[in-house]
Image 1 (spheres, rainbow, N blue to C red):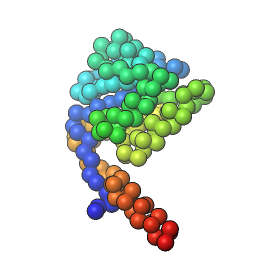
Image 2 (tube, rainbow, N blue to C red):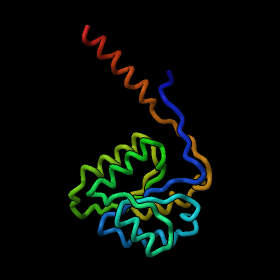
Image 3 (tube, one colour):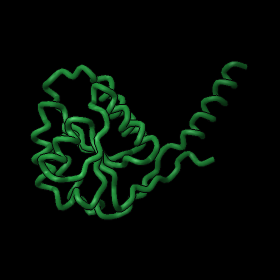
Image 4 (cartoon, rainbow, N blue to C red):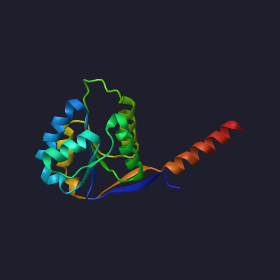
Length: 160
């Protein structure tokens, strides 16, 4: 069994748009400036952020629950399912977040599945203007079934 499996991020990406309260306006303005690119992709986001982006920019954005009410976890689940393959998350590093464990779990699952994620405007600008934005992108992700199987085999050897 191969150690890695290949996933494909399609030409038309599903982009999750997330922002902490102190960064919502910045994300809305960023989305408005990048409407011509974002219009080519499927957009979703956490509760209030998704609603505000849709209202202020006219972009269609599918809304999940707000972050503190499970929206971060819903997006994480969609990453695992393979439906979300790109994240723009304007986080606020200077404000305490009551749902910080949920945010950390989302960031972790994005790393595990090798999902591009921007945590600020500069990174989002670089990512969205990348030559890969309008192309399919194949990337290798750990073969979790093999990883689990190897761990089970190692434990069996340890127990003997």
